[in-house]
Length: 158
Image (cartoon, rainbow, N blue to C red; front, side, top):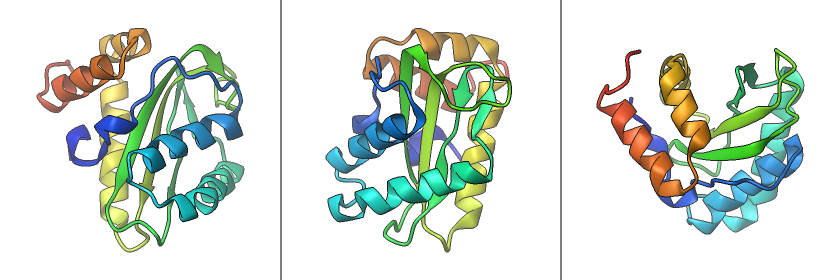
């Protein structure tokens, strides 16, 4: 599975202002709603579902990265977005560090395979230090999209 299969280009956000978990998740879900990928009426329940998943254990996986995600019945196809926070977000990460890169995923409950493949793709790509460094330095959504395309084309070493 490639980033282009599930990341919504129009929902990518750089210079994220929010600095705490709930506000970041709300901002990212709002970007998906603005891109017409999630229904405005489902916005709040999607945010709550992601926060409920966070209660099971932080999706702040370390090295400045978080992958908040959930399954939601209003979604019929896996969707996601990326956000970059220059100042960092307190996300209760496993390593205690602030998060600068966030990948948010929402998938239909009946497609767990897609969900897992997307998570696997994200974690595999994020093992590449160069990819992470470039993503964290991205100032514009187009820069992020270009890096995701390069990762899709195996232009990074992982």
